[in-house]
Image: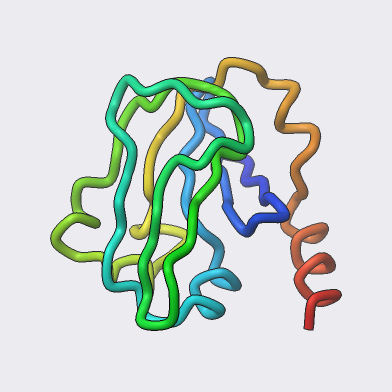
Length: 124
């Protein structure tokens, strides 16, 4: 699997034509303790850059954007009862949704792990 990162601090892990999306550890650290997550509905269509989900932390609420265009194939139902998964495992168990990618070329505008590391280093 290949993982890409957006400048909005979402990650997407690609498996065939499906991408699993969540927020990065950097984003989770900036937000603080996540207390609520609102995920999209299965079957909803989104364009790249659309607001797809919302997280609320003890500090603020923040929108989650889709790094690619496509249809929501699955959501992480665990987050409804346990939003803290995003705190403890933002890049593994704390994923938000899976999306069937409609345009693979949109991945070209995202960063690889090294690019994202350099990007976040420039923000500090």
